[in-house]
Image (cartoon, rainbow, N blue to C red):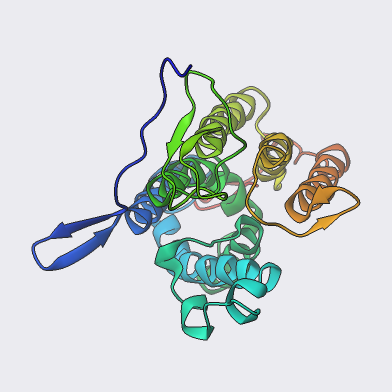
Length: 278
């Protein structure tokens, strides 16, 4: 018997007069704004220019969205060009969901690197400044999956189970499932707080704050991924994203162990007020 559960919205689209507003897109946009605001404050604290993160975002955001969509399409081609595929046009319709985080990180990193080259910012400084804001953006973006009734976990009768209607259920039977979107959203917030707390205590520089974010995020993503029941390619019993999490986690931990912090400045060091320290 289900004593309590989380209801799903009847629709992920809200109409503003004749204009349809998609909740998934709003979650992505809100996440981007939070990432820019938090990242800019941290960038200024690291000696960067005010508004610098906004300039980085003009390159990183579109590159990240393109990368996220390409990763999703590349790892799920059967959804668009398989026997029952939706077609090439559907592969471009990102408002229906389908953004791969790893493609987004890689694409966004490439866009941020271009922006840093153009503006003279240190890429490692920008990455460290952005880390907490980026994972907060992921926390907000996951709510887009809630509005789309997608990427949920196995059936469960837990009090916080998510109600899914029969049109979105994998077997066509309405029921309650693990709200993996909520698990990951809460985990992302915890990761952001961890990075901020650890950074204040140790001052993580030279890309180490970003590496801590990656390591902590992938640690949680591994077990959350194991709950999901959406179709996914598997190798040796694990989903593709599980393997990616393992590899990326190992790389991030290795980076944290091998990357030495920048030595503290000596009294003889000069500072022109614009020097960035990673």
